Image (cartoon, rainbow, N blue to C red; front, side):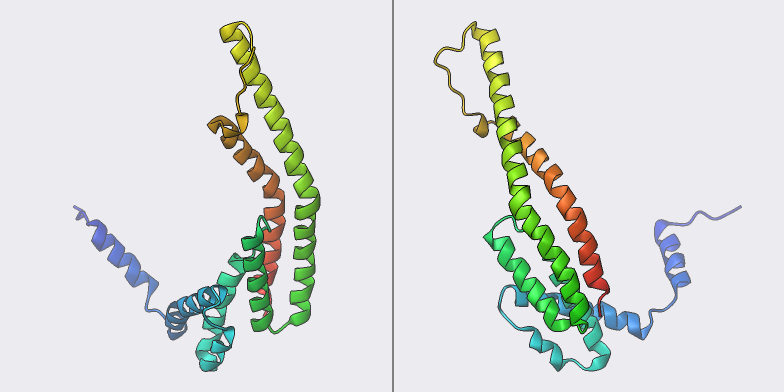
Length: 195
């Protein structure tokens, strides 16, 4: 009869099948997080990326990978001035650590086009959608008040402060931004592949 194994025993058998970690894997586990911390400090303007020079070549590539991952994650849509500054800082940092400047600049051109479109036509789309939603909510509230009270005389409700309005507007903004985010994610993937 087969013996029943505990979850721990099953997990230990799987670990044995995986085998020992290679030296390269251990270096990654240790130095990618160091690079991530360096990038976080860089983004907060607490350090510079020139600190990469203190690492020997064997580990520098892993540190650089960690830095690159964090900087790429911090490239976001220019929703406000804080996002714009953080994105600019991240893009400047990537330009500093990547070797292929031409490839970086080609991807940056595409990203800038997205940002420009987002700021111009995207802003117009968001304003139009907001006004349409607001008018629709006002009409629905007015109709509900008329059904309840028979007349809407003297009642003025600020629909923009209503939780349902805010929730609906949030959904619409996500939907409008998704097309930009999808493209931006593709370009960020291109950045990740550049040496």
